[in-house]
Length: 125
Image 1: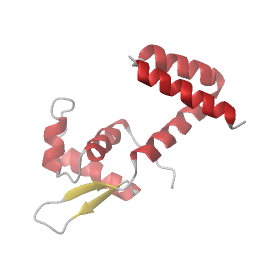
Image 2: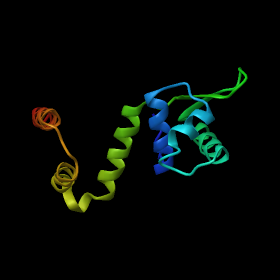
Image 3: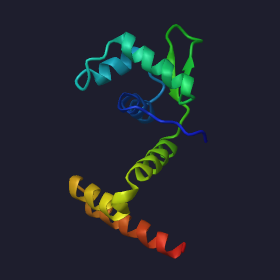
Image 4: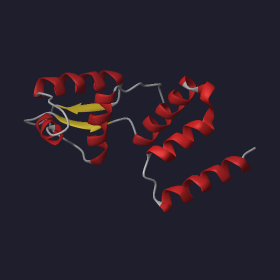
């Protein structure tokens, strides 16, 4: 997997594609209308940039371009987590997890999942 950095806007498009695909540019503009003021041209430029990065496949065989994710969501999240950890080394992992827990409205199931993950991490030592 190549290292791939996504901008905030690219994350918005990728999340749409991970949730449902294929999508047309029009469908993406409509889906993002309340969140962004992006035009069809803006979305098209961003999707072409994502295709150049290898994150998106553009199918031009039909009457409309269809867009598919090539980058898996789990891979993108892992890369983003590694990048974030590398940037904030001085604060430590504890501060990161603490901040995430305080700033997020975690469910009991999510907290249980965090405990499970931490326990597994200890077992790998």
